[in-house]
Image (cartoon, rainbow, N blue to C red; front, side):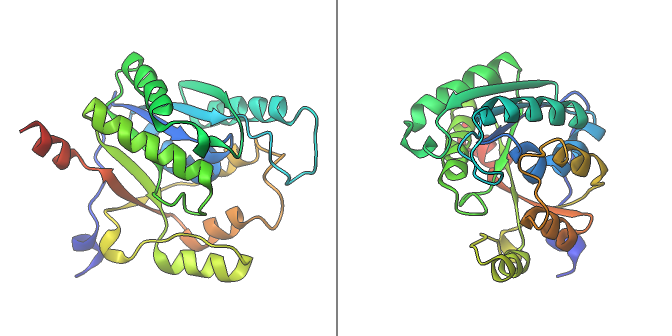
Length: 236
């Protein structure tokens, strides 16, 4: 099977309303930035709901006003990426998994309804790094999309790239085999890199972020957690 046969393209109509669901400020840039940029170039309207202020991060040491700093960083990055609306919530960073999924789903549904959202965007199952906050955000997005009757698209990593990152950084990245990847998206990373630099509290030198972008080049891989066809099947 060649690449053209293996991966479909992502077709987005101008004006499509997309809601990205993330756990922390910087997830929208470090993780989803190139995808959000591509969606914007296609004419989509992108909003973001972020569940925590990220004030438990220790990348730069203890900072009394880290939550306020990361709030400001998120606003700056959103402007760079052309995100139209940011809803930053205040659940405890690092403890999102203890929040009932139904609570998170209700918040997503309210924002999605207000924005006439037609598709959700989030991290893949497993959170790519196994972070429990990412896993909780993805679970809530998936449940919300089923309740709303709209698809959920997930940003993911090819298995070989995940294995390379895990080996080089001594952590666990979750990747997908070729048959689990639905879409290969060709991206321009200029806005993503600029948005990432809007998060100086997190964009440290030697971060896996920069190595991941190097390994991915101008490609991002996506998979459907709730596919448009499955929505149609359920409605039928």
